[in-house]
Length: 266
Image (cartoon, rainbow, N blue to C red; front, side):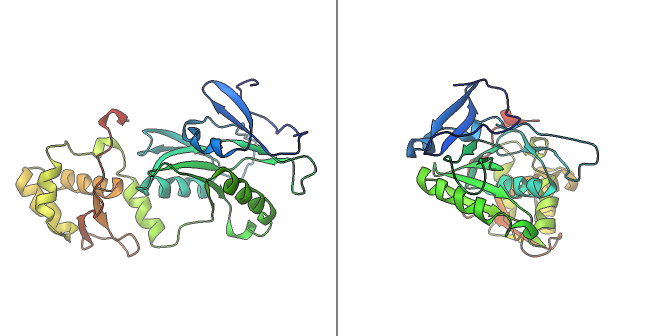
């Protein structure tokens, strides 16, 4: 174990096997790549690398409040923010970490000293997924690094993904829905069954708002916020691959998931 501060640069690996550095449990872990790593809670890791800023930097960086984790997750570009938005919406994702670990390639490896993937996500089935985010124009330039990282993930038992964006209209739809991900828009547990009764097997968003407003005796704007929150967190389903409007069809999700904990309120 070494110092727990985030790295400013990657150290050299003098061994003949790949090693992983991760900030977990208040320490910087330095371990060889083994299948046992797949069981570590990398979704709880702190960023292993420092986030740098400088005058005139072109990338926009910030933090995304995740309804999945109930906390902020850092990003270094708007494309990374889009990935976080999509991962937050994905009901198979239960944990997300930014800059989760650094892999140090064995000495003599062509393609660089090491690599810090952009994200690690924990999946509902217990598996893990490592994600690199790259603009489409930079995919070819990163192909060697991607191949090395994919081989590492195969060895560790993780999935691997290179994310390069969300197609329209899915991107715009998720951006709209994600505005309702916060717990301040979440209905009380006693309200959800009434909303589900009002929706039945499926109706338009406008009809769902009218019916639920009448049954709950609440303002339509409040009920609409409830519906859109439930759609983002997976209790309800709307078609995000077609332009969304008040005429869009909304229905109970086919795979029923538990409501997020109210303890995660912002």
